[in-house]
Image (cartoon, rainbow, N blue to C red; front, side):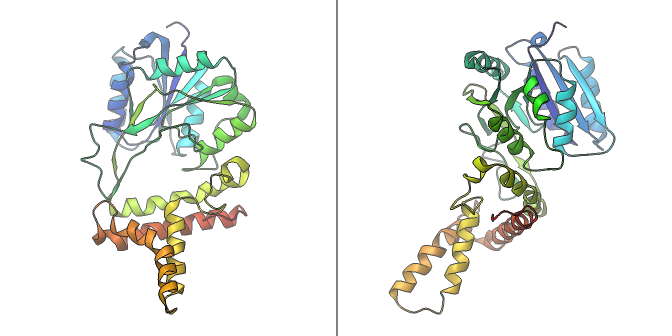
Amino acid sequence: MPDPVVSVVVPTHNRAARLGRLLDGLRAQTIGTDAFEVVLCDDASSDPAVATVLHEAAHDGRLHLRVLRREASGGPAVARNVGWRAALAPLVAFVDDDCVPVPTWLQALVDARDAAGVDDLVIQGPVDPDPAEYPHRYGPFSTTLWVKEASPWFETANIAYPRALLDRLGGFDEELVIAGEDSDLGWRAVEAGATVVWAAQALVHHGVIAQGPWGRMWKGRRWRYVPAAFARHEGLRRELQYGVFWNDRHRWLFGALLALLLLRRRGPGWSFLRWWFGGPYLKHLTHYRTGPLLAPYRLACDVVEVVSIGEGAVRHRIVML
């Protein structure tokens, strides 16, 4: 093939069906398959169906695909680093194996780079839930992703960096095993002088991922890695609510705890304060997707998240919950 204009880097692990849909989306790119390569890093998948999907894709001739395999799983940061370091193009686009890009995705990323007229840039594009799965598969024990504008989290579901910038920055921090590595890299790029570019037409659809009750709850444990990125980057710390809270739910939870401390106070003024502090979290619990029956479960999920964030905050000496 001629030298590719863009390299698409995909980390994958045990998602054969979703990986097949992603590869179909890449085959449909309007930029033309001779303009890009796909570098896919299999992070030690144990499902033999993954190997079947990759073997068929590598031999059907419709994609310029290279498959790299790790024998021991190291997490997405490691897999992405393996992928981009093997990439040949001057622009590296990252997408995840639970996503499907629209046909104009790569062309929109390349157009955004060309229009920006700068060498050091980070190109972000929108992410919406996959319309083939949302909303009918979006239940209380599933997750998906929305990115509506240039994001301080620099989600790797849809982002592109010049290869030269990745070389200078050293890529993703592999110590941030399963969370925070994307935000950390984006902020290191910004701090190095890179311009953030929003490519509104470069849309990616994110799958609705069923996790089950246990998996949905313990997803919160991954967030213990996140405070490392906040501790390193002042710009990211400005995203904390009141300089402390990671998101609305954590702030509401602490408001509810404060309301509990005021239970013995009598009088209309105290009643108002209890509702002021505790009302938002109560509304969150009773309106969560399927209603109040899941309130105890939602509370447990939020506690797991807050404890995990607090654990990471102590480790990295930052006030964050």
